[in-house]
Figure 1: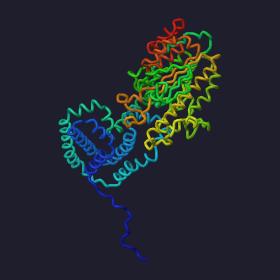
Figure 2: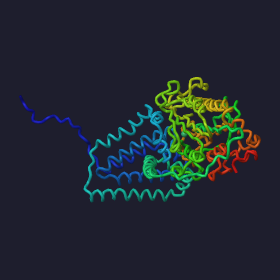
Figure 3: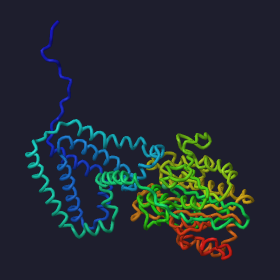
Figure 4: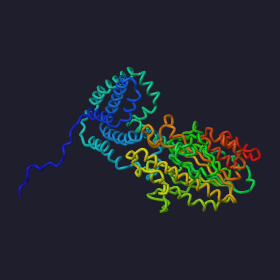
Length: 548
Ligand SMILES: [Zn+2]
């Protein structure tokens, strides 16, 4: 038996690369391949192309200075890989949907359900991540970095970073006037800088979440009392349907050319046509609309730190319940009975841990039969949640065709996306009409009302923008103009001046009004109630004045 002197090496040769070289290459890669939206917008916003060149060069220098600054053994590879993966993922949503990944967007993503998030993880997304995220990351992981000893590294890195910073400064100074004007006028521009904004937002979110863990809600409206029984002695029942992603622009009640509200228009409802949302994403709008803080005073932390509408109802002795068929109650029902439908497994309406909103309507009769005293029920519906609009309705509501039968809406004709979205509105129209009919059918036993408010709207390709969640300051009206429907049973309606209400309905309203309008409808007296923000208060007939 012979022995070979040397075993053939099966090890791959790992190329060696200097730390500054790898840092600079990665910075170049991030700028060139993951910032399409940023540079497209820059090109659009800058009139002076010399200033644009200075702006771009200055930023490139800052990118490189940063990656060189972290080019330290053990730190460099993980940070660069994290940046590349984050940039790849963020660029998919920014370039494809116009999404801006700020703290609210991260919170929304972090608090959504896996089935919701699953709709965004499409084969095209996986391909994009493989090409722009995983392959470059593997290359970074694979190469051998030549690190100098500490003092040599410090000297060499500073030799690279200082001139880069000076050049960035020179660029900033030379284009200062244009850069200041453009970034002030177009606040979205810097928000699309990849991956610094997404990663920075994720870090801010993580730090804030940690700090938010210990927040205890301060009591609100502990003096709340129901003014007295109704004239008929029947219990008041309010159903608040808080909806999902329905934009006012596509409600025929708002004047949309297509008849998307065939059922509601036959009901005796009041439609508030000028209603704006508190946020552009569920995680902001839902807690905000149930709080008394108003949009101007609302923040995620303030929302957590204060009790909300449901708590005030609780203090008044009103039974409250939250039915969840969306991505969670966003802490609104922390102190309320909650019933989740997402895993209801009702084969008629449910698939893959998601249920159509009919699943809740199907349970309403049982709930209504058990009403003993004044009660408030919140239905947090799935509504028009995208991008898989085609999964939000039963086949009979596929009236606008052709549909976009995929969550990859970018691959569909824009009109098909709009058709599919309009079908979701038809379905919500049907859900709301069904709720009204069930309440109306029991008017002999209860004194009912229903409020429907969408949490935010949706972009359907206007200016290349899709979905929602744009920072409020730059959000298009499609994301903030929402439908708001009020239906009152005969007894409650009799206490309101119809002509006055018709006038009020075309004036401005917002999520700020939900808290106070709901208290008013339930005749709750409390120091937390502000009549001015109750859309009905100015129209109540004096005799019924339960609220002062
Ligand atoms: Zn939402």
